[in-house]
Length: 502
Ligand code: NAD
Image 1 (spheres, rainbow, N blue to C red):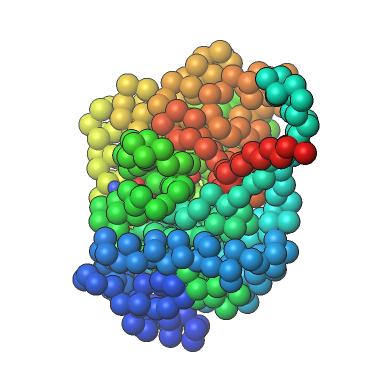
Image 2 (image 1 turned 120 degrees about the vertical axis):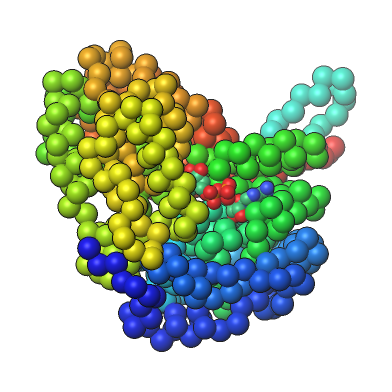
């Protein structure tokens, strides 16, 4: 274990160090603007030291950002850009993200605690990939011609068609677990559709969103097209989600906040997609390739320190192979080297904050009190950082909170089952419905599970493979609508029907 006492700035490059130590402002209308409220401390969770501070935006700041986005929507500088020019700006931004990749990855790692390899791969490379794919949609949005009948106008001759227009100002509200990547997931389909955006990053991890707004300007997006307000969810987030000039709310976060947003948006008929929590099952059948399933199940829960909406946090294993799978997963868990995300030797970093660390530890205690057996982990190492040991709990069932609720940390609950029907029923016995994986060599069984699992995303012999070309969304308490894919772009457009009498 390498749990350094303080923030290790020596591993930062010049660019990220300079950005970190600069004074920070909101990004509104192409300008770095001071907020009208106080400040938020930004903490490195590997040391719990404050490494920056950002404005704590007020409703007045949110108002200014939405007004800028609204102006930009109809400003010829954006509205009159040809689709191919919008695509070019998106491609420029993808390239700038890659060019500044090391800086962005370092900022993300020091701010979120995640491993540098992970922030490079997802927050940088996947973000660029998303922008490139979505840029293609800018030139592919079209309507239809429709041969109408209008029987009540027998003498008329008509030409009718539909067009797709940008839906308007989009509020992109994102959490802290994959901050830059989530911000780009919100931004890219909106920009492809010709919308303008106000991004609200999580209060814990706002740094890369601010940098992203600067890069968007450099990429050629006119002022006001990409705005960023940093601040708390309760004030800035709530003001943005409730703003009457926001046409669509694209939210990723907890189910509780998503529910509030949906209730509010319904009152004014504004549209939304909500990507919410999960408690995804990993089902290992007795015919599975266990050499793949064991590391696969470990990665499903311990990847990104369990701070993953799709984390495979419930492990169901056929009773014939239960002991072998559990031994394998536990020995991987026990071998993971905890340490700061900037240290390339670390295999798991701290959780995002002290509050999250306490929440996860409280769940482990709750499980213990309810009768769960801790097979490995079960606590926090002695460190100033917000670490939690990779933990596996057995002797659990669906009556326990640790099995029902999303923990959002490196805590796995493992249960044996007797047959396929039991596995399917128990996998579906949860309020969430985000993802699930099934590990088997039987192709008919694969199809039965794909059909039977009540979730938005199913993986077979792998867990949590997402791609920009595939829509990603949940059912039940995991949300409504989709990020990514064609679906996400079309959701940022509105259809207009036109009839011309000839
Ligand atoms: P959260 O809901 O507390 O916060 C998410 C974002 O919403 C933050 O920017 C926050 O400031 C803002 N917010 C908070 N209260 C708000 C309010 N009243 N109005 C408007 N905005 C508000 O969630 P979190 O704890 O930061 O993130 C973890 C959650 O996100 C987990 O439940 C996780 O499963 C979920 N998540 C889901 C997906 C997905 O795609 N389904 C992906 C990542 C994370």
